[in-house]
Length: 463
Image (cartoon, rainbow, N blue to C red; front, side, top):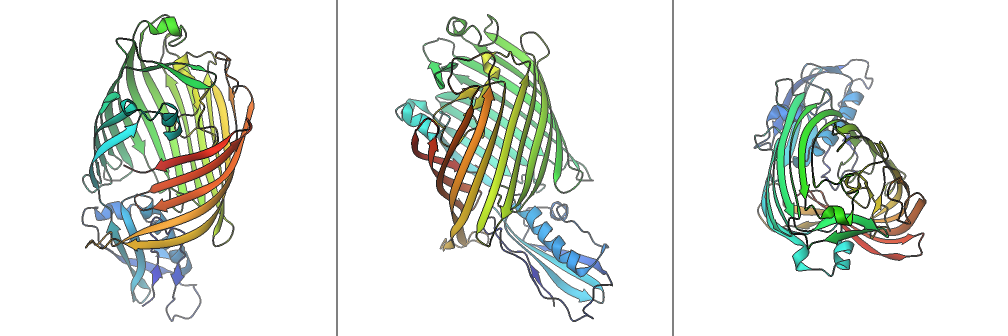
């Protein structure tokens, strides 16, 4: 029997396929026919959700070399669903020129009822600048149920208190019809915070917490998703947001809402397209990820903004253990004359330069480019010493990294910050530690053009 293995775990995604071909004539002029597809190990995941990720189906005619390539695509697609710790695809049996295919999976844990404890600041360095105050910590309960009905749907319920009171609910069903192409997502959120980031001064967020009413916000959204093939997803999102701040905020920053108002309500319509073709989506080393969106926020004088955003990541494997990656991000908002709440650019979310984490940079247009060279130092796994069919070992990968970033933010309205309207450059070196459940720990020692340097810690996980 011929086997084609595709068994890398999420932290072993660079493992190559091994092929042993049957003793046919040695030429591949005659195609094989895909027979039975036998799926094992999927205690919760519906078989058709697994088959949805395959570039072949029962009855297809395919030449054996192309089938081997299809196995690698299938493994990549199944790993990137984040449903499985391990995937093995093999040729199970030959019946003449009919081949039966075996797919064995090890499912992840899907239910995460975990306590929540996290500083409210943008990153750990910002929290340190605020004195590691316990009063600047959110705590509560996060309940996440992935693969809720076995159709790769997700249910989230967050109950958070502490610095910020927050309630959030979301349900994501990507496969709502029989064709497994159409889906939807619904959610709502409410939050209250007694402290308001009312302005950016000297490239720093400035807060006020002595206002009686603080800031309140509630929002709801409904999304339609369309996935015609394996790698591209289209989304149309309709949301509605209401935000209200203490009226005295206008004394501190009359441009907070762009007028002497203390509340704003607006709808938002977004179209988003996402393309994924990488070895491992949470930590890509090879392949492409690209995302673009266009949105319209508000339809009145109080809120009127168009926004275009784009993000692309490309990874190359240079040698067996060496990799180079490039990432580009860009945002364009117009009209350029936007209120303060629509001006956030660098320092929020994934839009930051490594080495300038201590600063925020506002703007109505900006771009960022990141370059990283990685060398794999170690690859190992640690036994869990617990009886588990899906978690008998914890895998680790550790990479050394050199990096350099560049970016620019254009700001027409708020020009009293030295890092706007100028090119910015940073660089440095660091370590990446990757383990299961998409947990990534990044240590950076960075330098910037201001003559500053320092150690920065970044943590990414799926919880």
